[in-house]
Amino acid sequence: MGTFIGIISGTLILFYAALDQGGARLFLNLHAAMIVIGGLTAALFISYPLPTVIRVFGVLQHIFRREIESPSWVITLMVRLAKVARQHTLLKLDDEAQQIQDKTIRLGVSMVVDGHPPEVIREVLEVEIASMRARHRAGERIFRAAARLAPAFGLVGTLIGLIAMLRSLGPGSAQSVGPGMAVAMVATFYGVMLSNLLFQPVAEKLRARSEAEALRSQIILDGILMVQAGTHPRVIELRLNAYLPLGQSRKENEGGPREA
Image 1 (spheres, rainbow, N blue to C red):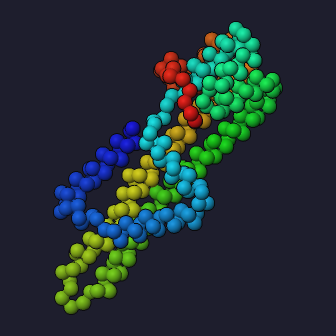
Image 2 (image 1 turned 180 degrees about the horizontal axis):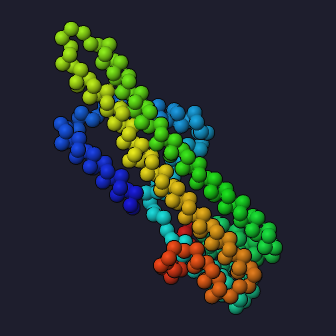
């Protein structure tokens, strides 16, 4: 929600500024938009595999749909699993695993039920976590590349406009320099706006999500191993709460696990 509000409010402010400077029509140029967006898209397709680019831009909907959530629900779940394991047996966790949406937790619980040794569970979960982090880093890299490239293609559009304007200059055409220059600068405006209002903020949001996922994954890994070891639920709660920022606790978010 915050991402959506930020982009909408930023766009409205820029639109208001455009109206105050002589009308929005001055800032609308189809050719400039085609140069910036088309050149940027082509450069990204050259730099990264096509399926990766398409998949990464698909994550935009997840950024708009939900904010970064606290990992405190993981601690709540681990404490509950520890209580079930102590009151019954580790085999009873199989029923709990069927109700867990998070695939990393479900995988860890299933391996505990199957009786795999701790080192094997740690190795498998670390591979799963590393794969998740790699996907997040790929998304962040692409959006940071887009943030770098957008102003460059904006400058390309400006240069094209300036070349066309200078070529048409002749006797009595001095009055057209100002309007022509204004049109040529629109492409740079598009590039800078896309870079600083969309691509760079989205890259920062993905970085923050990656850090939050890394924290959540570490909590999951430690929690699963402590549940398998038969650690007391209160001890699990205290140790996992140490990962949370000061002032947070597992009781702040007891809505249950979400899909990763």
